[in-house]
Amino acid sequence: MNSVSIPAGSAAPSVDGMSTRRVIGAYLAEARSECLRYMRAPSFMLPIMLFPTMFYLLFGILMGHASAMDTRYLLVSYGVFGVMSPGLFGFGVSLAMERDGGLLTYKRALPMPPGAYLLGKMLMAMMAAAVVILLLLAMGLTLGHVTLSLSQAGMLLLTGALGVLPFCALGMLVGTFIKGQGAPGLLNMVYLPMSFLSGLWMPLELLPKVLQQIAPIWPSYHLRQLALAAMDMGQTGVMKHVAVLLVFAAVFFLLAARRLRRYG
Amino acid sequence: MQTKTDVVARLCSVVKHYGHLAALDGVDLVLQRGELLAVLGPNGAGKSTSIGLLLGLIRPDGGRAELFGMDPQQIAARRRIGVMLQSAMLPPTLRVGELLRLVASYYPHPRPRQESAALAGIDDLLNRPYGKLSGGQQRRVQFALALCGRPELLFLDEPTVGMDIDARRKLWAAMRRLVAEGCSVVLTTHYLEEAEALAQRVVVVAKGRVLSEGSVDALRAQVPLARIRCATDLDAAAVSAWPLVNAAQREGDRLLIHTSEPERVLRRLLDADLSLSALEVQRAGLAEAFTELTREQNEQPEAA
Image (cartoon, rainbow over all chains, first blue to last red; front, top):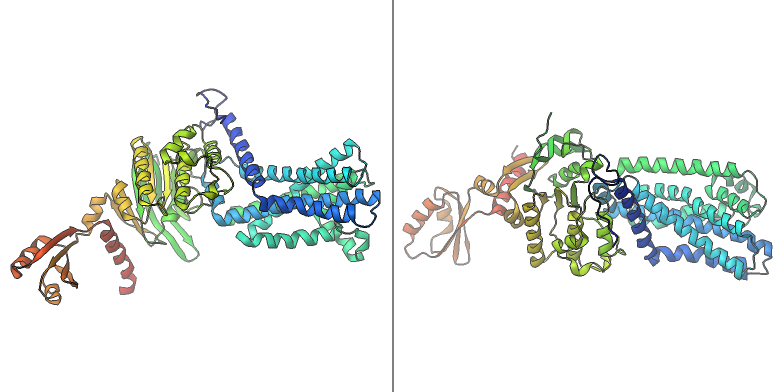
């Protein structure tokens, strides 16, 4: 409803007659549409919300007599598990479908400002990741009786919202390899083993020695270390993990962008 | 090379290969401001490739594609065009009004939403989710999205597929209105009557080359065929042996004659059968002209 008509000459028109204000408006409109369309798609939102929360409820809160420490520890594990999926699936599945259905081609033909498509999806994934963390936090605090300071909860939320980004890049890369309906299957083959191998389902210490040693090759391992640090659960080398995740994100993104340019 | 200001889009001896296959093999195309150009051709002729080049979706292997004198990949050029592609699955959960708002946000001076909706005849659909619409309604929404940015040039790739006759005529009226406002249109279509009804100029493409270019009348004149139908006892085989008769065959009690000189054949026909009745003479339509043009093209390699 609030479409603003801009009189000529106002708001610093750029060379091609599109005012900066309208360009920013286009980025916002893209992000808004991207969020709206997925929030309204239960087939997308439900698995993302349900799997981590159900697992946490079962294994973190109800099963056995989970100690306060376990409940807290599993909040981190399932938080990371829950953050990965909007990144992987939000980018991977939608890119695979949109390459298949012609939406990507259509968007490239339209004068959509550069990057708006990816920025919109990124924002959507960050929001979905934040919602997952909030749900888990709410469960942990109420049902699980986890005690957390406000800053710890805030740090976990921040870690989740930003930590989704390397998985967005990985999802995007997978989305460039496959078109259409096959994407969810392929992504699950990345998602589930990676979660397992980086100790999100059971502590790394229970896995065979080799798997423990190669765990640092998975981005989810590093995100878990960061999430533990956010909860003050004794991890050091925060900057190292941040750097590793940044490198992962950059490499996946550049490879994906290159494939998109080449093969569309 | 200086482009004239009234040329809005141009392909200059464009070559595009897909592997060994030459999708376009030296195509020249010029579109003037305010012109409706129909691009016709059988499937795989290179229509979509031509459009893709002008939209900057693909790059030519040789030659040049220009939009408003610019590279089509420049966003400034694309801000002046509207697009309706053959197949684009838009997000099904977004409402029509939201889609219009999104696409309009990409343009510097878009139309008000109500105006776009009215032009495309979708006023009543604005609050409906896109995925709940029928195929024809979705096409109309896509048309609204194409024109919502107040483009100077519209690309319409098979716009009326899946529409009923009424919706199609409404879309034609909207297209005529846009052209009257000075908008140029590039239209590809399988419906020749669509090209016949709308186009000022028709380009026929086949096998990656432009076979013919000109007004609809000029195109028809290239294939000076006429059909004569009448009720007569004359033998089809005998008539087909007459000079100037291309073919003659029987359809029930009627005789159907194809000729390029209907006046002279008619004179002989009327002399030969005084009791001849139910006479019809029809000039070839665009459909016949098109079939004729592309058939020759198809037969050449076999004859060679």
